[in-house]
Structures are given as structure tokens and as C-alpha cells.
Length: 166
Image (cartoon, rainbow, N blue to C red; front, side, top):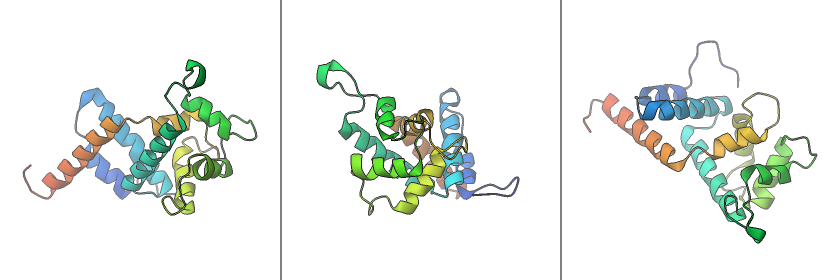
């Protein structure tokens, strides 16, 4: 989505409001990354986080991060390579949708085709038209504890901006 120079999405404005110093800039960095992804894709921050959680859960069920046969651990990067049908080192929209629907068993009623397309735009940080392993890993590995901190900051900022004390 194109935006006029200097324009800010509601997601970015909301996240800016919540960006209070914490943890040496970790939360602020994550806030900026999530706001950029939400703005680029057209997904709300809440929906983006829901999709992230769905991906994380599906990948866990597939065995990512756990020791498998022979004591080897399946990495997210190795899983990514299985989705790269044409062996380009990048995943296109068709490959991402297949991964979500077939391998991760994510139902179209849970994450729609339009949301898959929006997720694809959100993940394609460099605007290349495809997703590289680092782009997917960065998105999936934003830790749940950091997301909780971000959520608390957003709620607190919205509550106090309405003139209420916590």
C-alpha cells in the first residue's frame, strides 16, 4: 500500500503512543517492526499478532525447535527450505499459501486468502516480491513475552490517554 510522504497509519500512531522506554530499547524496536509490518500489509496489529501466533503454534506442531529422529533439531530455516519448491532460496505467495494450508493445516476460515496475501506483503520487508528465510524467522521469533509487554504498553497508553489512572 502506498502512503503519502509523512502520513502515519493508525497502527503506527497507536504504537508510537505506547513506545515508552523499557528494556534498553527492545520493546521500542519490536513496536517499530510490528507497526511497519501492519502498515505495509493493511492488517491490524491485533490480526498480525494472531496470525503470528497461529504460525508459531503450527510450526511447533511440525516439530520446529524440538529434537526429532536421530536427536536432530528441526530449525525454522530448514522448514523454510521445504516450502521453497523452486529452490530459489525465497518463498513466493503460492509457496507460502501451500505451506499454510497443506503443511501447517491452517484453515481458510481461520486465516483467509486475503490475509495470506496481506501477510505476504508484511513479511516481504525488502519489497523483493518474495520472502527470504530471515524475513520469516524475524516475524515468527518475536517472542511471546515481548508481545505481552507490547500489549500491556498499548493498553496502558490507551487507558491513560483517555484520562484514566491505572
